[in-house]
Image (tube, rainbow, N blue to C red):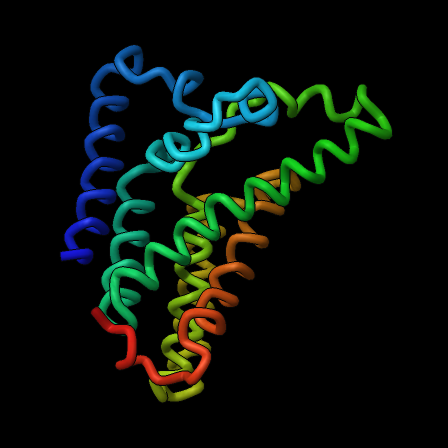
Length: 198
């Protein structure tokens, strides 16, 4: 049952991407995107809605996110995927916004540009669940070379599609990836994958 919720999230993201491609005016990125200002003014729902909009090329991001989701669900269940996705998306945002708040407190002018900037995309979900997948592959007894090859391939695809530009999003992606690694330690402390696959 929970497996279908992962597919439903991916389908929702795909529908929004299609609508944006056909008629960008029908989906207001600014209404759905999060930002430090949105959080400060109480628009907390944007933390959720921002995770339904793709920033960048939609088809490859959907494919890669879907493949990672399928593998995580197969190895550890939909609950592990959801925990990783939520902790990665929310956690990375909170860490990044806390950093912005600290900078704002010290040097308001340098943080002014990002306070209102729309922050959206599925990349933090993808980064977190990729971290989870890599730990799951290792714990499942995958050959170290297979795990290394998957790591290089997934991180290479991520960098190629999302990019590294020295912006705030880079920090969010790294934090999300680390949170994704940590999810397995918290959810599956024994290392036995079959105990939660459901």
